[in-house]
Length: 251
Image 1 (cartoon, rainbow, N blue to C red):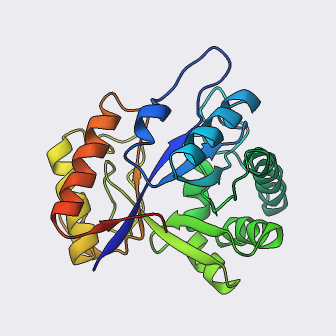
Image 2: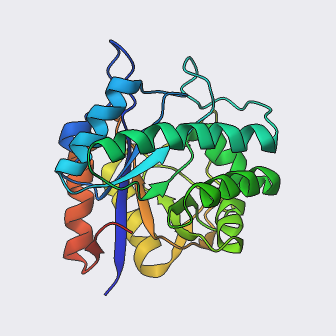
Protein backbone atom coordinates (compact mmCIF):
# COMPACT_ATOMS: atom_id res chain seq x y z
CA UNK A 1 0.00 0.00 0.00
CA UNK A 2 1.20 3.49 -0.81
CA UNK A 3 1.81 5.70 2.21
CA UNK A 4 2.32 9.45 2.56
CA UNK A 5 2.57 12.04 5.30
CA UNK A 6 0.63 15.32 5.30
CA UNK A 7 2.53 18.18 6.92
CA UNK A 8 1.76 21.84 7.56
CA UNK A 9 3.78 24.78 8.83
CA UNK A 10 2.33 25.92 12.15
CA UNK A 11 3.00 28.16 15.13
CA UNK A 12 3.55 31.09 12.79
CA UNK A 13 1.64 33.70 14.77
CA UNK A 14 3.64 36.32 16.66
CA UNK A 15 2.51 38.37 19.65
CA UNK A 16 -0.87 39.90 18.78
CA UNK A 17 -0.60 38.88 15.12
CA UNK A 18 -2.45 35.72 14.12
CA UNK A 19 -1.48 33.64 11.10
CA UNK A 20 -3.06 30.34 10.12
CA UNK A 21 -5.69 28.13 11.73
CA UNK A 22 -3.48 25.70 13.61
CA UNK A 23 -6.05 24.13 15.90
CA UNK A 24 -8.46 23.28 13.08
CA UNK A 25 -5.73 22.10 10.72
CA UNK A 26 -4.34 19.67 13.31
CA UNK A 27 -7.34 17.43 12.64
CA UNK A 28 -6.29 16.83 9.04
CA UNK A 29 -2.47 16.62 9.01
CA UNK A 30 -0.10 14.02 10.42
CA UNK A 31 2.97 16.21 10.95
CA UNK A 32 3.35 19.78 12.22
CA UNK A 33 6.39 21.93 11.45
CA UNK A 34 6.48 24.49 14.25
CA UNK A 35 8.18 27.85 13.77
CA UNK A 36 10.98 28.55 16.22
CA UNK A 37 10.94 32.34 16.60
CA UNK A 38 13.23 33.51 13.79
CA UNK A 39 10.84 33.90 10.83
CA UNK A 40 7.69 33.61 12.93
CA UNK A 41 6.44 32.36 16.28
CA UNK A 42 7.27 33.36 19.82
CA UNK A 43 7.73 31.32 23.02
CA UNK A 44 4.04 31.29 23.91
CA UNK A 45 2.96 30.45 20.37
CA UNK A 46 5.53 27.67 20.24
CA UNK A 47 4.34 26.09 23.48
CA UNK A 48 0.69 26.23 22.44
CA UNK A 49 1.40 24.73 19.03
CA UNK A 50 3.41 21.90 20.57
CA UNK A 51 0.66 21.17 23.07
CA UNK A 52 -2.03 21.15 20.37
CA UNK A 53 -0.04 18.82 18.15
CA UNK A 54 0.77 16.34 20.90
CA UNK A 55 -2.84 16.28 22.11
CA UNK A 56 -3.98 15.35 18.58
CA UNK A 57 -1.30 12.72 18.02
CA UNK A 58 0.37 14.84 15.34
CA UNK A 59 4.11 14.35 14.86
CA UNK A 60 6.07 17.44 15.96
CA UNK A 61 8.94 18.93 13.99
CA UNK A 62 11.10 22.04 14.24
CA UNK A 63 10.75 24.61 11.45
CA UNK A 64 13.87 26.79 11.61
CA UNK A 65 14.10 29.80 9.33
CA UNK A 66 16.16 32.87 8.59
CA UNK A 67 16.07 35.75 11.14
CA UNK A 68 13.59 37.83 9.15
CA UNK A 69 10.26 38.45 10.88
CA UNK A 70 9.34 41.31 8.55
CA UNK A 71 9.87 39.17 5.47
CA UNK A 72 8.44 36.00 7.02
CA UNK A 73 11.70 34.24 6.28
CA UNK A 74 11.02 34.27 2.55
CA UNK A 75 13.82 36.68 1.58
CA UNK A 76 17.26 35.31 0.76
CA UNK A 77 20.00 36.35 3.18
CA UNK A 78 23.64 35.74 2.31
CA UNK A 79 24.62 33.52 5.25
CA UNK A 80 27.65 31.27 5.65
CA UNK A 81 27.41 27.54 6.31
CA UNK A 82 28.62 28.18 9.88
CA UNK A 83 25.82 30.68 10.41
CA UNK A 84 23.28 28.22 9.01
CA UNK A 85 24.59 25.55 11.39
CA UNK A 86 24.26 27.87 14.38
CA UNK A 87 20.82 29.21 13.41
CA UNK A 88 19.39 25.73 12.96
CA UNK A 89 20.97 24.46 16.18
CA UNK A 90 19.60 27.38 18.19
CA UNK A 91 16.07 26.99 16.87
CA UNK A 92 15.88 23.22 17.18
CA UNK A 93 17.07 23.52 20.77
CA UNK A 94 14.37 26.05 21.61
CA UNK A 95 11.53 23.93 20.26
CA UNK A 96 12.99 20.73 21.66
CA UNK A 97 12.73 22.22 25.15
CA UNK A 98 9.00 22.90 24.77
CA UNK A 99 8.39 19.42 23.37
CA UNK A 100 10.21 17.86 26.32
CA UNK A 101 8.24 19.98 28.82
CA UNK A 102 4.99 18.73 27.28
CA UNK A 103 6.09 15.10 27.53
CA UNK A 104 6.64 14.58 23.79
CA UNK A 105 9.51 13.76 21.46
CA UNK A 106 10.74 15.93 18.59
CA UNK A 107 10.46 13.83 15.43
CA UNK A 108 11.72 15.88 12.50
CA UNK A 109 13.27 19.10 11.21
CA UNK A 110 12.15 21.04 8.15
CA UNK A 111 13.85 24.32 7.22
CA UNK A 112 11.53 27.18 6.29
CA UNK A 113 11.11 29.43 3.29
CA UNK A 114 14.25 30.96 1.83
CA UNK A 115 16.52 28.80 4.00
CA UNK A 116 14.76 25.70 2.65
CA UNK A 117 15.08 26.84 -0.97
CA UNK A 118 18.71 27.90 -0.55
CA UNK A 119 19.59 24.53 0.97
CA UNK A 120 17.84 22.75 -1.89
CA UNK A 121 20.52 23.92 -4.33
CA UNK A 122 23.55 24.83 -2.16
CA UNK A 123 25.57 21.80 -1.14
CA UNK A 124 27.48 23.78 1.51
CA UNK A 125 24.32 25.05 3.22
CA UNK A 126 22.66 21.66 2.93
CA UNK A 127 25.62 19.93 4.56
CA UNK A 128 25.71 22.51 7.38
CA UNK A 129 22.01 22.06 8.15
CA UNK A 130 22.14 18.27 7.95
CA UNK A 131 25.21 18.19 10.18
CA UNK A 132 23.49 20.37 12.77
CA UNK A 133 20.49 18.05 12.82
CA UNK A 134 22.65 14.92 12.98
CA UNK A 135 24.79 16.29 15.81
CA UNK A 136 21.76 17.22 17.92
CA UNK A 137 19.94 13.92 17.46
CA UNK A 138 20.72 11.43 14.70
CA UNK A 139 17.23 9.91 15.04
CA UNK A 140 15.59 13.12 13.76
CA UNK A 141 14.07 12.92 10.29
CA UNK A 142 15.24 15.63 7.89
CA UNK A 143 12.55 17.03 5.58
CA UNK A 144 13.71 18.53 2.30
CA UNK A 145 12.61 19.22 -1.26
CA UNK A 146 12.40 15.97 -3.21
CA UNK A 147 15.71 15.20 -4.90
CA UNK A 148 17.42 18.24 -3.40
CA UNK A 149 20.91 18.82 -2.04
CA UNK A 150 19.40 18.81 1.47
CA UNK A 151 18.07 15.30 1.01
CA UNK A 152 21.40 14.11 -0.39
CA UNK A 153 23.31 15.70 2.51
CA UNK A 154 21.05 14.03 5.07
CA UNK A 155 21.37 10.64 3.42
CA UNK A 156 25.16 10.90 3.28
CA UNK A 157 25.22 11.43 7.05
CA UNK A 158 22.93 8.47 7.65
CA UNK A 159 19.91 10.54 8.67
CA UNK A 160 16.42 9.37 7.88
CA UNK A 161 15.03 11.75 5.29
CA UNK A 162 11.55 12.61 4.03
CA UNK A 163 11.37 13.85 0.45
CA UNK A 164 8.77 16.60 0.34
CA UNK A 165 6.42 17.69 -2.42
CA UNK A 166 4.07 20.64 -2.52
CA UNK A 167 0.37 20.48 -3.27
CA UNK A 168 -0.09 24.15 -4.17
CA UNK A 169 3.21 25.10 -5.81
CA UNK A 170 4.34 24.74 -9.41
CA UNK A 171 7.65 23.19 -10.44
CA UNK A 172 10.50 24.09 -12.77
CA UNK A 173 12.15 21.57 -15.11
CA UNK A 174 15.08 21.15 -12.68
CA UNK A 175 12.72 20.05 -9.89
CA UNK A 176 12.87 23.32 -7.94
CA UNK A 177 9.78 25.27 -6.96
CA UNK A 178 8.73 28.25 -9.06
CA UNK A 179 9.76 31.42 -7.22
CA UNK A 180 6.91 33.17 -5.44
CA UNK A 181 8.04 36.33 -7.24
CA UNK A 182 7.01 34.84 -10.57
CA UNK A 183 3.46 34.51 -11.93
CA UNK A 184 1.98 31.04 -11.64
CA UNK A 185 4.02 30.05 -8.59
CA UNK A 186 0.93 29.11 -6.62
CA UNK A 187 -1.87 26.73 -7.58
CA UNK A 188 -5.09 28.32 -6.35
CA UNK A 189 -7.53 25.77 -7.79
CA UNK A 190 -8.08 23.02 -5.21
CA UNK A 191 -8.98 20.38 -7.78
CA UNK A 192 -5.81 21.09 -9.75
CA UNK A 193 -3.72 20.86 -6.58
CA UNK A 194 -5.28 17.52 -5.63
CA UNK A 195 -4.64 16.10 -9.10
CA UNK A 196 -1.01 17.24 -8.90
CA UNK A 197 -0.61 15.43 -5.59
CA UNK A 198 -2.17 12.22 -6.90
CA UNK A 199 0.16 12.32 -9.90
CA UNK A 200 3.20 12.77 -7.66
CA UNK A 201 2.22 10.09 -5.14
CA UNK A 202 0.86 7.43 -7.47
CA UNK A 203 2.88 7.93 -10.66
CA UNK A 204 5.99 9.54 -9.11
CA UNK A 205 6.10 12.38 -11.64
CA UNK A 206 5.11 16.05 -11.67
CA UNK A 207 4.23 18.24 -14.62
CA UNK A 208 6.38 21.36 -14.71
CA UNK A 209 5.37 24.85 -15.85
CA UNK A 210 6.78 24.02 -19.30
CA UNK A 211 4.54 20.97 -19.58
CA UNK A 212 7.34 18.48 -19.10
CA UNK A 213 6.90 15.53 -16.74
CA UNK A 214 9.86 14.92 -14.44
CA UNK A 215 10.41 12.17 -11.81
CA UNK A 216 9.68 13.03 -8.19
CA UNK A 217 9.44 11.13 -4.90
CA UNK A 218 6.80 11.97 -2.31
CA UNK A 219 7.27 10.88 1.30
CA UNK A 220 5.47 13.91 2.70
CA UNK A 221 3.15 16.54 1.24
CA UNK A 222 3.21 20.16 2.39
CA UNK A 223 -0.09 21.97 2.89
CA UNK A 224 0.21 25.70 3.52
CA UNK A 225 -1.79 26.50 6.64
CA UNK A 226 -2.01 30.25 6.03
CA UNK A 227 -4.27 29.96 2.99
CA UNK A 228 -7.86 31.16 3.08
CA UNK A 229 -9.25 27.63 2.64
CA UNK A 230 -6.46 25.60 4.23
CA UNK A 231 -8.67 23.32 6.33
CA UNK A 232 -11.15 22.63 3.54
CA UNK A 233 -8.30 21.79 1.18
CA UNK A 234 -6.54 19.57 3.72
CA UNK A 235 -9.76 17.65 4.33
CA UNK A 236 -10.41 17.28 0.60
CA UNK A 237 -6.86 16.14 -0.14
CA UNK A 238 -6.80 13.58 2.66
CA UNK A 239 -10.17 12.19 1.61
CA UNK A 240 -9.06 11.83 -2.01
CA UNK A 241 -5.78 10.17 -1.05
CA UNK A 242 -7.54 7.65 1.17
CA UNK A 243 -10.18 7.02 -1.49
CA UNK A 244 -7.33 6.20 -3.91
CA UNK A 245 -5.94 3.63 -1.46
CA UNK A 246 -3.12 5.79 -0.12
CA UNK A 247 -2.51 5.49 3.64
CA UNK A 248 -2.01 8.87 5.30
CA UNK A 249 0.30 8.69 8.33
CA UNK A 250 3.35 10.38 9.80
CA UNK A 251 6.77 9.48 8.39
